[in-house]
Amino acid sequence: MNIKQALKRKNKLVGEIQEEFSKASQYNVVDEGNPRPYSATAAIGEWMRLTNDLIVLKTKIHKANLPVYDKIFELSELKNQVKHLKHLNCVSGKVSGGRWGEGEPVIKHAEINIIEKDQMVKNLEARIESLQDELDQWNHNTIID
Image (cartoon, rainbow, N blue to C red; front, side, top):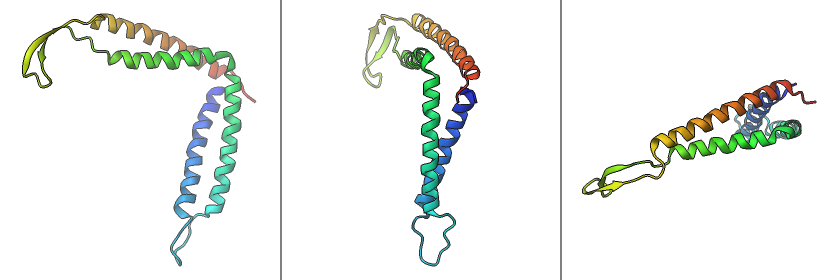
């Protein structure tokens, strides 16, 4: 199995783990005389087994990704930078004063203007796309045990 397949399996396992615990939680206690559609004991057992499977799979994924952790971490931080930059206030010029615009107009000047901000975001997004392409190829080509 390659890393791409392993990541899909990991996400599926996470869902199955949640589902098993939900069964245990929902059907552990039932009113006397009511049917118990799922055994809480069996669901907890399956929940624990699936959790162990997830631990093994995550360990394999992490070990296989050691050579590209720098790219993974860079990708994460660049996405965070883009998110923050997109919210950077770049207002310049005359702006209504006060919280509700009832005060005297104020003249604002941004050190980084909207054009510079947009270019920074564009450059970061290009690097993100490049890194994502490299990681996609890595995930497709790298086999884990």
